[in-house]
Each structure stands twice: as structure tokens, then as C-alpha cells.
Image 1 (cartoon, rainbow, N blue to C red):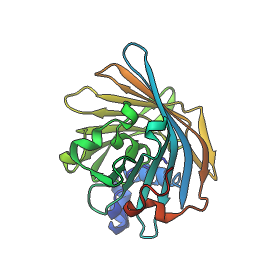
Image 2: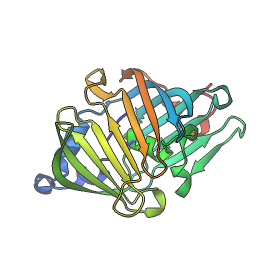
Image 3: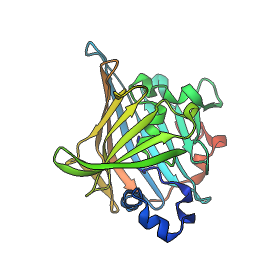
Image 4: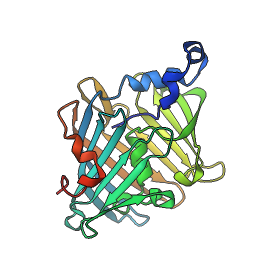
Length: 262
């Protein structure tokens, strides 16, 4: 859903104002845009997976996001622990009118590999959080149709409800994703991801009373991702959020992967 930017259609700025006024999704877009870092964000991340019998596995790293000079948004995850995964890097960048361009760098491979199709659904550190889930957490623009559903309440909080469906089914592991956006903080505090049928495959929940804040931007401190089919769950914890500080844009280039994550 998946630091923390809602998918906003790049064509919105080409739509006449009269049409925007009639677009029910626009109110949610504007809410989320108010909570988008203008330049960058950086934070620590810890991913802990618990399997069916209670066994745990985890990894740690840093998450970087940036508004690039070309107007596109990009996010980068750099893993530091456990030692065998140190230097592993994941990069995802918006492509106007198309699917995100995503790359995975493994130190032993020494060159980045593009992730497309089913590979996007692979688990980060073997967790329930896929690469696509990370993209959604970072709220990168995706090639999707958006539909506003009736407003609702989550744990007593009023929320907008947005349904997203991929325009290209080969570029998503999901047939649709329902996002519940807190009207007060403009943060997605719950999402349901459907792989097939009417029951969600995954559910993501956020503790709305436990948020990080930096330079006017609010972001989750903890995200619980549940695989409802496999009966496993993963907790994604964030801390040390820094917004709109100086960041090296070169590190968001495929050609630089492996040089900035050690």
C-alpha cells in the first residue's frame, strides 16, 4: 500500500476542474497528497515473520523515498541484517502511464535483476510482505483504476475507502486492493488484497494511535500483514523517520545499485 504515498493518477493534472469536482476519488487524492513528503523520506525498518508453529525470522534495513528531478517518485530498501542478506537492495520507480520499474540487487549476483510479473509477489526476507506490498506501503503511483467505495469506520475512526484494480493483470499479484484511509491523518490504516474470489488473501492493519511524525508528515510506526490463506503474519516496524532532508538522488538509479547499500 504498501513512505507512505497513495497511488495518484498522473493524468489528474490534465483533467478539467469541472471534472475534478465531480470525481469522487479526488477528495481522497487531495487528502493523501497533503501527507506526501515534498522531497524525501528516510526511516529504519524491521520485518519479523511468524510462521504457523510460532517460529520467527527477521531482517532489518533502511527505507528511502524521493521525489526525483524528473517528477517521478522512487523508493529504495537497503537490508543490513541478517549478515547473509547484507547489501541486498530493492529499487522501484514510477513510469508515467505504465507499470512501476522494479529491480532487485543481490550482492552475490553483483548485478540488478528486473522484477516483473509473478516475481513482484515474492516475499521480502521470506516474509508475508511482497515487493508489491512494499511499493504500496510507499504509495507509489501504480497503473490502476481507482474507485471510491462508501465511507466506513475502522476501530471507530472515519475512513475513506478506495478500490484499486490493476490495468495490466500481469503486473500485480492481486485482482483488487481495498484501502481504508483515515480521514484525519490521511494514512492508510487498513488494506485488503484479493488474489481471487471474494475473500482477501492478505490484510494489512496499522495502529492509528501509534504514528511517526516528521516535518508535518505522518506515517505508521507498525504495520501488521496477515496472510489469511497460509495463516502466517509479519510485523513491519518503522522508526527514526526523517522527512525532506538532503538525499543523494544518484542512489535511486539502477546503475548505482550495490554502491550505496552496504
